[in-house]
Amino acid sequence: MTGLLRCLKCLATDPKPLENASKLPYSLSVSPEPEEPAAMPAQPENGGPRSCTFFMLSADFVLQFPGKSLPFFQEIRDKYTAEEPLVEVALDYADVVKGTHIETTLAVSHRWMQPDDPDPDGEQLKALKSFLNSPAGEKIERVWIDSACMPQDHPKGSRSAEDTASFKGMLKEVNRLYLGTTVLILLDMSYVSRFWTQFESWMSMQYATPSGLKSAVGTENERHHIVCIQNAAAQAESFAKLLVDQWANKTPDEAHSFLSKPDVTVTNQGDKDLQLPKIMELDATVQGAFGDISRSLEDTLVASEAAAARAEAELAAWEAENDAKAGEKNRFKVAAGQAASAVAAARMAKEGHARAISKEGEARAKDCPSDLLKLVEQLRSGTDRQQEEAAAALAVLAANNDNQVAIAMAGGIAPLVALA
Image 1 (cartoon, rainbow, N blue to C red):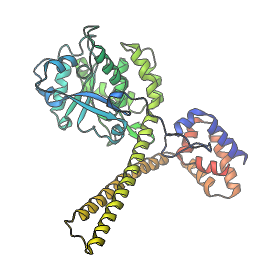
Image 2 (image 1 turned 30 degrees about the vertical axis):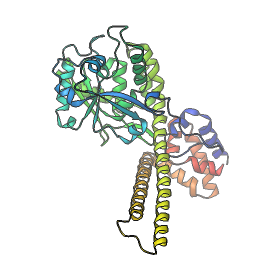
Image 3 (image 1 turned 45 degrees about the vertical axis):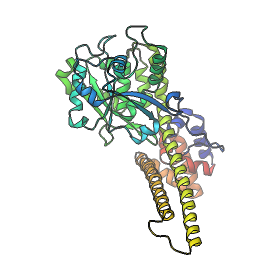
Image 4 (image 1 turned 90 degrees about the horizontal axis):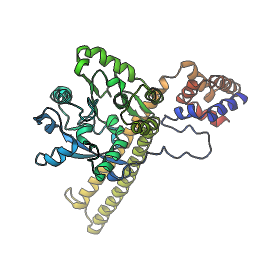
C-alpha cells in the first residue's frame, strides 16, 4: 500500500493542513493516542473560569439620553445612579455558539473621531438611536459601546488601578461580543484604515459552526448592520459594499494576514499584538465551545436519567408500601412525572445539538469535488486493488494543501488510517 502510506505521511507531517482539516466534527488524528479537546483561552477570574463579565447600557437609557453624545463609562457609573443604566452580562463561548445574546444585545463598532472623544458632533449617538428605533433594533435590550461600557483613561492617568484591571480583562475577551451579538457598524471614511474597526467588522460577518467560523453574509445567520455616517453617508451603498466585499469571506488565516500589515493602523500597538494571535485561535476556540456544549448536554442527560430512576424507585416504594396506585396529585407521582419531563427535555437538547453538528458536516462534504468523493468511496468499499489505486491517487492530490483539507472533509482520513 505504497500510495496509502505516502498519503498518510503527507497528511500527518504537514501541520498546517491538518490544523485546517481539524475544523471538523470528528477526529482526524492518525496517532493511536486520543487528542485532548481544543483548549479554551484563559478567561478573566471575575466571571468564572470560562466567562467574562461585560458592562452594557440599557437600550432605554441610550434612547432617552438627552445629551449630544454618550459620556464615558466612569461618568455614567458615578453620576447616573438613579437611572441604573449599566447592567452586567457574563458571556462565555457557549453563549457565542448558541447565539444566546444575538436577538437582545447590540455591540457597536465605531471609530474614535478624536483621541479623547469618539463622538464630538453626536453623529454616532444619533445613528445608534435611529437604529434602535428601527425594525432591526426593536428587540435590542442592551447596548455595548467601548467608550461608555469600559473604564476609560481620560484624562490620561485618571483611571484607578481597579478600573484598569477591569478594562484589561474585558479588552482581552472583547471578541466574544463581536462574535456573539448583533453588531452595528458605524462606517465613516477612515473606518477601513483602522485595526480595531476592521477586526470587529470581520468578526461581525462570521458565525460559529462545529467546524469553526464561517461567513454569515447572505445566510440566515447574518447579524451585522452597516450605517454610513459623516462623509461616507453620501455614498453609503458603495462604502457598505466595499466593507462587505473586503471581509465577508475571509478565513482566519486571511484576516490575520491582512490585519498584520503595517498600513492597518492602531493607536496602541499593544492592542494589535494582543489580538492578532487570537485570530488564529478562534476556530479552535469555537470548536472547543461546541465540544463543551456536547459534554454538558451529555452530563445533563445522565444526571436527569439518574434523578428519574430515583423518582420512579421512590414512587414504586410508596405504592408497594401502601398497596395502591398513586393518584395524579401524589407527590411521588408528580416528582416522577417532572423527572421524566426533564429527561425528555435533556434528550431533545442533546439530539438537537447532534443534528446541528451533523448538518454542518454534511454541508462541508457537499463542497468537496465529486472526483475526490469517488476516490474516498473507492477507498472505503473497493477491492484491494481499487483501494491501492485510490490511495495512490489521493497521495498525488495530497501534495496540495487545499486538497489535504478536502480529503479530510470528504471523510478520507478514517479509511486511510484503517487500511494503514
